[in-house]
Length: 299
Image 1 (cartoon, rainbow, N blue to C red):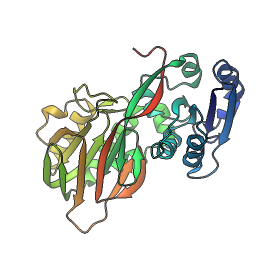
Image 2 (image 1 turned 90 degrees about the vertical axis):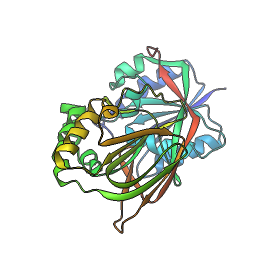
Image 3 (image 1 turned 120 degrees about the vertical axis):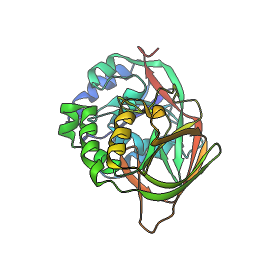
Image 4 (image 1 turned 45 degrees about the vertical axis):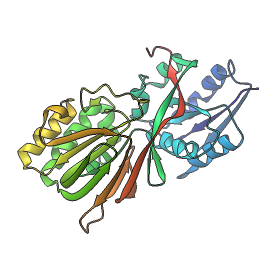
């Protein structure tokens, strides 16, 4: 008997996820004999519900929420021996990972395109003891990302991030760091560093590299310490997928790396859009660690 758990964040997005539960249950009855709904009320509820699903060997978890709820579920599932398949039901504002797999940001459309047969095993990153689905970063760009309001994201989409990135750069500060990896190294001042399981965030493609979510490699991007004009130029190239053409952005791929802060200042780490840790850190990729449902229109 196939079982699934729906982990819902009732407060994400426009707070209307509850209205879809009956529609979702009706559709899921075609595939699952037992459906359990768990609603998050506080931090780490999604993580703890996901751990329980693993312990009970439930076949599938569906996340009805946004990027934060998905990140919590990833952190619950990734450390377990038995890991259910994971499906995304976009109930948040941005639903970034849903777009990475070619899915819709609209819940009605996502339900229409939901396939119970089409799945893919994807890479997951581990930074110290925390897991992330698609990126870890640090630098003033974090401020631009986390300060982007929901209203801005709904109105402008990815341009909301672009606007705040360009606004943040004049106050940017570089720090001296050391990066060691299995393929390359860097020591010097950097404004920001991105370590990604894929080469894009939402609609922002950082390079023309065709790296995929299951290739077993990180894409690493480092903005080096240059003048304001150079930083603006580098940020523009990052946002338009041309980092491989910019001399102020160092990029490489690797499977494992460590990052040390060579200055006294504490440096926060942003994972999937939330501050989760600080430098120093050890990061590794877990190849094809999680199996996710793909939309049926995904090629």
